[in-house]
Length: 427
Image (cartoon, rainbow, N blue to C red; front, side, top):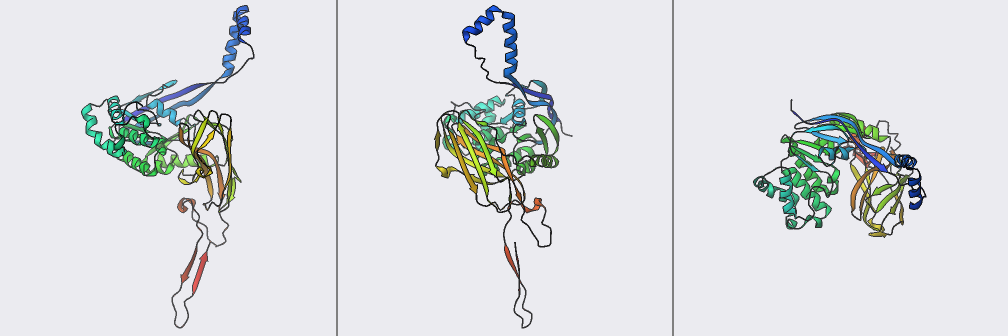
């Protein structure tokens, strides 16, 4: 049996959330209270602090082990604690309680902007990251050409990375993390920023890393990629460890438990960077028949002056495979919003020829230093078409996601002097 390379024991992470509260007293009045009765003022002050601060446990008593050579998926809905766990394992943040034990060098790719020095060039950052991983200059030079070829940014190698696009940044960051031969490779959903061809390339490289006996920890909402790449999975739910085991049963459990939630329309505000807030994303009706239209409503609010360059609705199957986008750039982007202004869009998807089941909807947003794919914000359900053909349809797992209309004819051979006959079947 392979050796344990990562041990996580009773890991917890607490954040303290502050809530603004105005007592209405001016500075002079508060000073008078403090001088007249210091003990009473101190007691009141402690009560106020307690009332205006809330504890939030991003992780609660999480324990598991990872063996050398494991390709472990960490799955769960938004807010489950996946990214917090990876940041602790990458030593970016400290746990509140518990401990971790890691054998070997760790290379992490968690989010656009981490791991590189903004003022240094791509070339300089390759050597900097290698040095951080404990590699000699000779070792880095040996891998240098492979890194540059994989990242496809040779023309911009001597340009400061602060001038890179998000796609260029991710390509170089992944190439560095995957090629400098760490014992443990940690990859978050950041790969979703890259194009489809590069994502496929990255998944192939992670597969090679795993076959080489190194350990991979992978966070993704794409369950097809998880099942293709990973051997085991850890399922987090509201900061706690729900289950861990072979990837197939874990993905099935996650999808079954998520299925009852995707019909909920999004209504609570969600901060998207410092400048923009999602106020509402709703679909009506929440349940439609196959091939029926589906209405949607989207409302954004500017917290600061901002410019929305790109915006799309992302439609996912229950396996978290993206099946379609609704590109909203045709509404006249970029859209500039002043602080406090709202941007409200109403529309209709004309027809959804989908297999019956639940579907989730996310957003792709590119606005004022915020570039991200957001998952599981809302959803809808599709009923299957009525059928009286006399046979039961195949199970959903065999039918894909699109329900196709078709018409076909069986042409029977000529029998003597009789003309060929046709048997027509349609849906």
